[in-house]
Figure 1 (cartoon, rainbow, N blue to C red):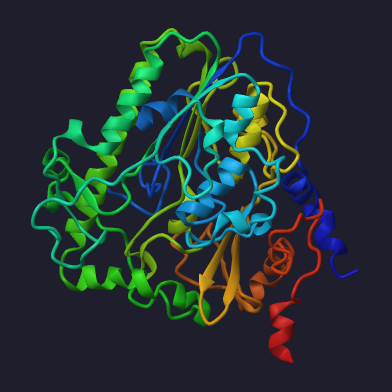
Figure 2 (figure 1 turned 180 degrees about the vertical axis):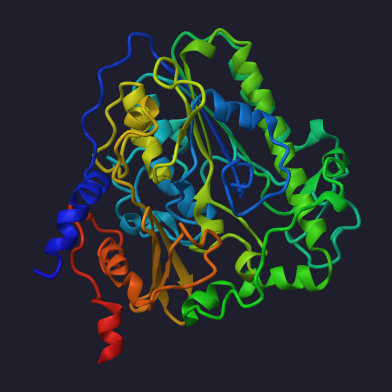
Length: 488
C-alpha cells in the first residue's frame, strides 16, 4: 500500500522506460542510412540554453547540425564513465541490468550481455542487411567485431616531446600544443575513413559510425585551436568553495582521487589554461565532425541518411571540486544529443524533455524499420522527433559503482522535479534544479521537498538485482527507505 500513490503517478513513466520495445515500425519506403557520431568527454557547454556556463564555445558544425533537426537539451547518460556508457547505449541494456558500472569490470562476466540474443546496435543493422562501418572510439570494452564489415578502433596521439607540458601531472592529466600536424592525428584519420565511406558507391544501406577520442585528456591539439581562445577572454565555470559541505560522506568520496586534480589546477593558477585547452580540443572535435557532415552533404546520400550525434557523458572542469567525469551531478551526467531524420524532423526543433542515451537504440530501430532485440531498455524518441514538445513521461536514470571498501551502487534520477541521488543504501541528495541549476544546495532534508523526494526515491532501480531483468513496473524489492533506517 505504501507505493500505491507513487505508482499511480509514475506508472506510465516507469512502464514506458522499462518495457521492452519489440514491435518495429513499418519499413520506410526508401532504406535509410545512418551516420552515427559520438564524442568522448564532451560536456554540454555548447548548448545555448545551458545556464551553468556563459563562456564562448567555438563549435559551428555541431551547432549547425543541432539546428538542422531536433536538439535534445535534457539528455542524460546511463553511466558517467566511458565503457559503461558506451556499453549501455550500444547494447541497449541499462547498467543496472548488465551490472557494468565501471571501466575495470570484465564485460564477459555480464550474464545478460553474453546472451546470444543481445545484439550491438551495429549488429542489428548488419542482421537487417546493412553495411556496417566503424572508425575511432565508438564502443569501449564491449565490442562485437563480427557485427562490423569494417572496423578500425581508436588510438591516442603520442605525447609531445617534453611532456607533461602543463607541468602539473604526468599521464593523461596534461595539455598543450601537439607536435603532429592535424592530418597526422588519429581523430583526423578516423574522420578520413568516414569521409571515404560517404564518397563510395553503395549497393545497400549503410550504418556508419565515427567516434572521436577527443576531448578526452590529454588535450593535445594544434596551436591554432588554442589561439581561438585567448586566455584573457576565458570564462571560468562558477565555483563555490563550500560546495561539498552539505554532501553525505559517499558523495564527498566521489570527488576524491582523480577528482582532486581540480583543486591542484586551481591552486597552481592554471584554471584558465586548463579550460582553454579543453575548449581548444572541443573545437578540434567540431572540425572533424564537420568534415564528416560536409562529406554527407556532398554525397548522394544526404536525403536518406539519419544523423545522430551524442557525447558519452559529461565532464567537470572544477565544479564540485572535481575534474573529468565519474560523478552523478549535472556536469558528469548531462550530454549532447541531436537527431536529424529526413521526412521526420524539422529544422530548428528543440526538445526539453528528459531523455536517456538508452533511447537511441530503439529510436534508430523504429526510424529504419528494424525489429530491436527484446533485451533493450529505453524508449523510442520518434514521437519527440515529430513533435519536440509532445507529451512525454520524463525520467532519465544514471548509475555508477564506486570503489570503496565494498562495491556500492549509486543511482541518480533526473526529472522535471529535480535531481535525486542515492549512494549505497542510505545516503541521499536532492536538488531543486529549477531554482538551483548548479546543484549547490542539497535539499534532501528540507521538509518542503519531502513529498518530491519520496516520489523520486520510488523510481530507484533495485541494487540487489543488478544484472537481472527488471519487471515492467518499479519500485520492487529495495533496501528500504534511507530516512527510516536513520531513525532506527
